[in-house]
Image (cartoon, rainbow, N blue to C red; front, side, top):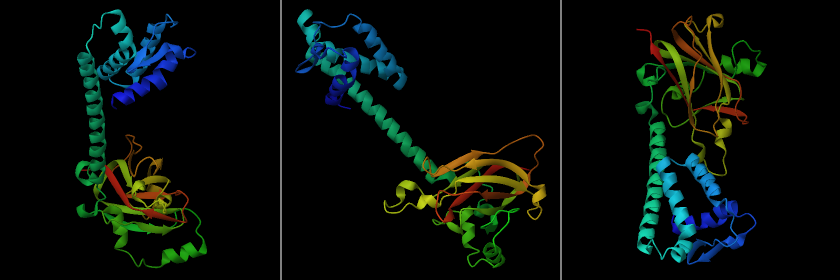
Length: 300
């Protein structure tokens, strides 16, 4: 934000609040200025209100800097006329420069924070919590199917699930960084993962290809899972013994990597297997699974 932008903010946002029906109060004189002729006597109350709004948006020091700058810009011509130019142009310019510098520094810090957050997500395996489903630690995808256990499958789904997968190794991409996804037919499915060891799961991280990286002509994130639920077990062949950890929604428009806390209570036991039931996606006729991470506390 430079002085011109600050001046424009005064004209378009500040003054209409101060003088909604008296534009003559605002007179340009080199810089933005304020004439006292016909102005409302409650101007300082309104300025105080503006300061309060600034204080909500910005930190205390920054809001004070901005408020002082606005006051100087607005009252500069009046102050020069009525106080023998008490403040020199050099002094005012130095104050305004300090405000601009502070704004620039704040913007740079915010931008740096965003970039650091993105780097942490792109390197989640290094910066995030331990992933007990990771293939490099011994985790393994046991099965991926286009149906959910306990539901009625179509004849075609039953036939497909009976066939050995031609890409058995490819499904391991779900628990490692392969740069590609494992696709299943339809909007529903199930993924069973054997963890590196028995743990008390406390969260799950779902990752999809970043939306902003897709070409404008393609909307690949429509294939991302949407609604899903998480179950834990020590015997994946017996769903009756499964522990339910919660029902979640992966909002791909909000972020490409999201961590969800799992349901906890004292009666839960450690588990070696985790099953993710995908209940819907975002509209595509197939579902892409890029990466699933399981976090928790090891049994030993």
